[in-house]
Image 1 (spheres, rainbow, N blue to C red):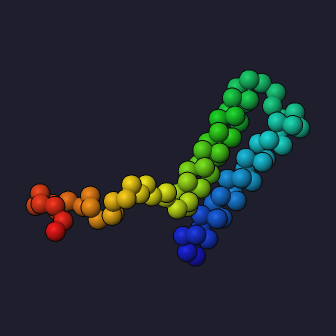
Image 2: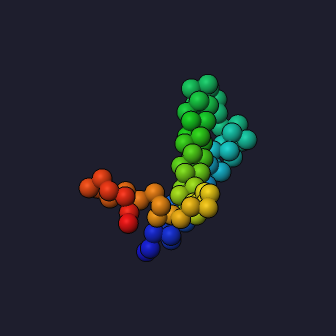
Length: 82
């Protein structure tokens, strides 16, 4: 299993769990405030992790102000790139 397949399966699990929480809310499965807060916290966590995975999978936008990508490279000895 490669990384992309793994992340795809993980996102599906997160979304399924999120969906189950929503169904639990709609079905009246929340009978006290403590349970409500717990499930709401879980739902937020699932959404957060899914969004972070999505952000990592998106290609980064590169800001290009006319400068080359190598113009900002600094060698560890303190000199700039020749």
